[in-house]
Amino acid sequence: MLALRVSRPEGFEFSPGQRVKLNFGGLKRPYNISSTPSDAFLEFCVERVKDGSMSPRLFELKTGDPLLVKARAKGKLTLCPTATEHLMVASVTGIAPFRSMVRHALEDPRAGATPHFTLLHGGANAEELVYAEELTALARAQPDRFTYIPRVSPPGELSEVGCEAATGRVSTAALPFIERLDPTKTQVYACGHPAMIDEVRVAVCRRGFSFASEAFWKL
Image (cartoon, rainbow, N blue to C red; front, side, top):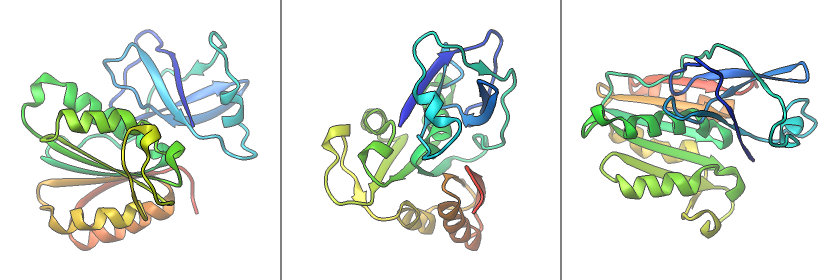
Protein backbone atom coordinates (compact mmCIF):
# COMPACT_ATOMS: atom_id res chain seq x y z
CA MET A 1 0.00 0.00 0.00
CA LEU A 2 1.13 3.52 -0.77
CA ALA A 3 0.00 6.80 0.79
CA LEU A 4 0.78 9.15 -2.09
CA ARG A 5 0.96 12.82 -1.13
CA VAL A 6 1.13 15.47 -3.86
CA SER A 7 1.09 19.25 -4.03
CA ARG A 8 -2.41 20.67 -4.10
CA PRO A 9 -3.05 22.73 -7.24
CA GLU A 10 -3.89 26.36 -6.57
CA GLY A 11 -7.64 26.84 -6.27
CA PHE A 12 -8.38 23.10 -6.21
CA GLU A 13 -11.60 22.44 -4.27
CA PHE A 14 -13.36 19.20 -3.38
CA SER A 15 -15.89 17.70 -1.01
CA PRO A 16 -14.71 14.92 1.34
CA GLY A 17 -15.33 11.58 -0.38
CA GLN A 18 -14.77 12.76 -3.94
CA ARG A 19 -12.19 11.47 -6.41
CA VAL A 20 -9.95 13.04 -9.04
CA LYS A 21 -8.06 11.73 -12.07
CA LEU A 22 -4.28 11.45 -11.84
CA ASN A 23 -2.28 11.63 -15.05
CA PHE A 24 1.16 10.08 -15.18
CA GLY A 25 2.94 9.54 -18.50
CA GLY A 26 -0.35 9.84 -20.38
CA LEU A 27 -2.13 7.24 -18.24
CA LYS A 28 -5.20 8.54 -16.41
CA ARG A 29 -6.90 6.87 -13.48
CA PRO A 30 -9.40 8.13 -10.86
CA TYR A 31 -8.40 7.96 -7.19
CA ASN A 32 -10.41 8.93 -4.13
CA ILE A 33 -8.86 11.71 -2.09
CA SER A 34 -7.99 10.59 1.44
CA SER A 35 -6.90 14.00 2.72
CA THR A 36 -9.33 16.73 3.83
CA PRO A 37 -10.22 20.10 2.27
CA SER A 38 -8.28 21.82 5.06
CA ASP A 39 -5.01 20.04 4.19
CA ALA A 40 -2.49 21.93 2.09
CA PHE A 41 -1.79 18.78 0.03
CA LEU A 42 -3.71 16.00 -1.67
CA GLU A 43 -3.26 12.43 -0.47
CA PHE A 44 -4.24 9.21 -2.20
CA CYS A 45 -4.25 5.61 -1.02
CA VAL A 46 -2.85 3.36 -3.77
CA GLU A 47 -2.81 -0.43 -3.94
CA ARG A 48 -0.28 -2.06 -6.24
CA VAL A 49 -2.31 -4.03 -8.77
CA LYS A 50 -0.53 -7.02 -10.26
CA ASP A 51 0.05 -6.39 -13.98
CA GLY A 52 -1.62 -2.98 -13.58
CA SER A 53 -0.66 -0.18 -15.92
CA MET A 54 -0.84 2.73 -13.47
CA SER A 55 -0.30 1.66 -9.85
CA PRO A 56 3.19 0.10 -10.34
CA ARG A 57 4.35 3.39 -11.85
CA LEU A 58 3.00 5.37 -8.92
CA PHE A 59 4.97 3.16 -6.53
CA GLU A 60 8.15 4.16 -8.35
CA LEU A 61 7.58 7.91 -8.00
CA LYS A 62 10.21 9.93 -6.16
CA THR A 63 9.93 13.28 -4.44
CA GLY A 64 9.73 15.99 -7.07
CA ASP A 65 8.54 13.77 -9.92
CA PRO A 66 5.75 15.37 -11.99
CA LEU A 67 2.22 14.05 -11.58
CA LEU A 68 -0.72 15.83 -13.17
CA VAL A 69 -3.95 16.30 -11.20
CA LYS A 70 -7.15 17.05 -13.07
CA ALA A 71 -8.52 20.45 -12.12
CA ARG A 72 -11.93 19.20 -11.02
CA ALA A 73 -12.95 16.58 -8.47
CA LYS A 74 -16.00 14.36 -9.06
CA GLY A 75 -18.10 11.82 -7.24
CA LYS A 76 -21.32 11.58 -5.27
CA LEU A 77 -19.98 9.51 -2.37
CA THR A 78 -20.15 12.44 0.02
CA LEU A 79 -21.45 12.94 3.53
CA CYS A 80 -25.23 13.05 3.97
CA PRO A 81 -25.90 16.36 5.76
CA THR A 82 -29.15 15.28 7.43
CA ALA A 83 -28.06 11.98 9.03
CA THR A 84 -27.03 11.90 12.68
CA GLU A 85 -25.55 8.41 12.40
CA HIS A 86 -23.14 7.32 9.67
CA LEU A 87 -22.19 3.67 9.10
CA MET A 88 -19.24 3.27 6.71
CA VAL A 89 -17.97 -0.05 5.35
CA ALA A 90 -14.68 -0.18 3.44
CA SER A 91 -12.38 -2.79 1.96
CA VAL A 92 -8.66 -2.02 1.59
CA THR A 93 -8.22 1.32 -0.27
CA GLY A 94 -11.96 1.94 -0.03
CA ILE A 95 -11.00 3.58 3.27
CA ALA A 96 -9.82 6.72 1.42
CA PRO A 97 -13.11 8.63 1.05
CA PHE A 98 -14.21 7.72 4.57
CA ARG A 99 -10.96 8.90 6.12
CA SER A 100 -11.52 12.24 4.41
CA MET A 101 -15.15 12.46 5.56
CA VAL A 102 -14.51 11.46 9.16
CA ARG A 103 -11.44 13.61 9.70
CA HIS A 104 -13.14 16.64 8.17
CA ALA A 105 -16.29 16.23 10.27
CA LEU A 106 -14.42 15.65 13.53
CA GLU A 107 -12.16 18.63 12.92
CA ASP A 108 -15.08 20.95 12.12
CA PRO A 109 -15.84 23.08 15.21
CA ARG A 110 -19.38 23.71 13.92
CA ALA A 111 -20.26 20.01 14.13
CA GLY A 112 -20.93 20.05 17.88
CA ALA A 113 -21.62 16.73 19.60
CA THR A 114 -23.14 15.03 16.55
CA PRO A 115 -23.12 13.19 14.20
CA HIS A 116 -21.63 9.84 15.14
CA PHE A 117 -19.50 7.75 12.77
CA THR A 118 -18.92 4.00 12.74
CA LEU A 119 -16.22 2.90 10.30
CA LEU A 120 -15.59 -0.77 9.51
CA HIS A 121 -12.46 -1.54 7.51
CA GLY A 122 -11.57 -4.95 6.10
CA GLY A 123 -8.41 -6.37 4.56
CA ALA A 124 -6.58 -9.63 4.07
CA ASN A 125 -3.69 -8.59 6.33
CA ALA A 126 -2.28 -5.73 8.39
CA GLU A 127 -0.75 -4.01 5.37
CA GLU A 128 -4.17 -3.65 3.77
CA LEU A 129 -5.60 -1.82 6.79
CA VAL A 130 -4.32 1.54 5.62
CA TYR A 131 -4.47 4.32 8.27
CA ALA A 132 -5.36 1.80 11.00
CA GLU A 133 -3.05 3.35 13.57
CA GLU A 134 -4.30 6.86 12.88
CA LEU A 135 -7.97 5.89 12.94
CA THR A 136 -7.55 3.84 16.11
CA ALA A 137 -6.01 6.85 17.84
CA LEU A 138 -8.78 9.11 16.58
CA ALA A 139 -11.45 6.74 17.90
CA ARG A 140 -9.76 6.61 21.30
CA ALA A 141 -9.57 10.41 21.43
CA GLN A 142 -13.24 10.92 20.50
CA PRO A 143 -15.11 7.76 21.54
CA ASP A 144 -18.47 9.55 21.69
CA ARG A 145 -18.19 10.61 18.06
CA PHE A 146 -16.23 7.91 16.27
CA THR A 147 -16.00 4.11 16.34
CA TYR A 148 -13.38 2.30 14.26
CA ILE A 149 -13.53 -1.47 13.71
CA PRO A 150 -10.75 -3.17 11.65
CA ARG A 151 -11.07 -6.76 10.45
CA VAL A 152 -8.58 -9.12 8.82
CA SER A 153 -8.80 -12.58 7.29
CA PRO A 154 -6.02 -14.29 9.32
CA PRO A 155 -6.28 -14.43 13.13
CA GLY A 156 -4.10 -12.47 15.50
CA GLU A 157 -3.43 -9.04 16.92
CA LEU A 158 -2.22 -6.30 14.62
CA SER A 159 0.26 -4.83 17.05
CA GLU A 160 2.43 -3.56 14.22
CA VAL A 161 -0.28 -1.07 13.25
CA GLY A 162 -1.29 -0.20 16.78
CA CYS A 163 -4.67 -1.90 16.95
CA GLU A 164 -6.42 -5.21 17.39
CA ALA A 165 -8.54 -6.62 14.59
CA ALA A 166 -11.25 -9.26 14.68
CA THR A 167 -11.41 -11.83 11.90
CA GLY A 168 -14.02 -12.42 9.22
CA ARG A 169 -15.76 -10.53 6.45
CA VAL A 170 -16.25 -6.82 6.99
CA SER A 171 -19.73 -7.01 5.41
CA THR A 172 -20.70 -9.56 8.06
CA ALA A 173 -19.36 -7.28 10.78
CA ALA A 174 -21.71 -4.56 9.57
CA LEU A 175 -24.86 -6.65 10.14
CA PRO A 176 -25.23 -6.08 13.91
CA PHE A 177 -25.03 -2.33 13.37
CA ILE A 178 -27.55 -2.45 10.53
CA GLU A 179 -29.97 -4.40 12.72
CA ARG A 180 -29.89 -1.96 15.62
CA LEU A 181 -29.54 1.46 13.97
CA ASP A 182 -32.53 3.63 13.09
CA PRO A 183 -33.01 3.84 9.30
CA THR A 184 -34.64 7.27 9.61
CA LYS A 185 -31.53 8.76 11.17
CA THR A 186 -28.74 6.71 9.55
CA GLN A 187 -26.84 6.89 6.28
CA VAL A 188 -24.96 3.74 5.23
CA TYR A 189 -21.98 3.85 2.84
CA ALA A 190 -19.74 1.21 1.26
CA CYS A 191 -16.62 1.57 -0.85
CA GLY A 192 -14.13 -0.86 -2.36
CA HIS A 193 -14.71 -4.42 -3.55
CA PRO A 194 -17.97 -4.75 -5.56
CA ALA A 195 -18.94 -8.08 -3.93
CA MET A 196 -18.67 -6.54 -0.46
CA ILE A 197 -20.76 -3.59 -1.61
CA ASP A 198 -23.47 -5.87 -2.97
CA GLU A 199 -23.66 -7.76 0.33
CA VAL A 200 -24.04 -4.56 2.32
CA ARG A 201 -26.58 -3.18 -0.17
CA VAL A 202 -28.83 -6.22 0.18
CA ALA A 203 -28.74 -6.00 3.98
CA VAL A 204 -29.50 -2.29 4.22
CA CYS A 205 -32.14 -2.16 1.50
CA ARG A 206 -34.16 -4.86 3.25
CA ARG A 207 -34.34 -2.61 6.29
CA GLY A 208 -35.03 0.65 4.53
CA PHE A 209 -31.71 2.44 5.00
CA SER A 210 -30.45 5.15 2.70
CA PHE A 211 -27.37 3.76 0.95
CA ALA A 212 -24.48 5.24 -1.04
CA SER A 213 -21.58 3.32 -2.56
CA GLU A 214 -18.64 3.36 -4.92
CA ALA A 215 -17.09 0.22 -6.40
CA PHE A 216 -13.54 0.28 -7.77
CA TRP A 217 -14.34 -2.11 -10.60
CA LYS A 218 -17.19 -4.21 -12.00
CA LEU A 219 -17.56 -7.93 -11.38
